[in-house]
View (cartoon, rainbow, N blue to C red):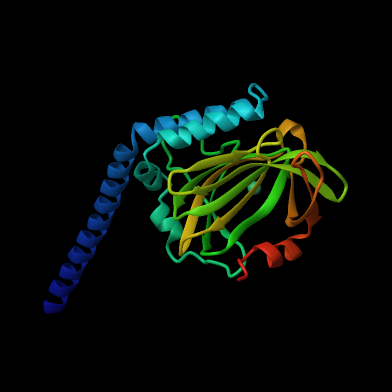
Length: 253
Ligand SMILES: [Fe+2]
């Protein structure tokens, strides 16, 4: 009899615990969904539309850059951090000694938001003095928002591409703090270079590849050893990833 009672009691307890977890997860997801509606949902839909327009060549890359950066500047940062679940993404983040690490970003499942999008979403994270090493892009556009920390940021236009070199022109040199945005395309500010100024630093990236139906490419370049090419231009040699990371992945003092 006693055993029977204990069993019954155990069953009841298990049921209660399960119900509790079910209720809690239901409550959390509903609370989350309602707290990100409607601002972040609307924002994500607009982002999706702009990216679709670029993919279908309805808008030029420079306009895409303007519009995505405008969206980046519109959304309240706490709202975006919640939307991408930044806390979970960065929990136990593996910071490399050289360069950066990335994590794919998922948007929550919400009405009217396709699960598969034409754009790639990632966060880039790094320790102080580490860098998103200087590189240019082909058939690619991307936009970047500083989520945490601060960066020394430099951009260059790609004036011409040669076999082993990129001919580049400096366009932006600034300190990019939380909420600061930037972007690249074949037409404008094609080369970027971020160095983390703070203990840790993160960007949120929206990336479009294989634009115009052509395979994308990335060229790491040796800007520090670049030669002056007249009219403010620099001829910078292309580098393989390993060499580039060794030279630019971590600040050497
Ligand atoms: Fe890039």
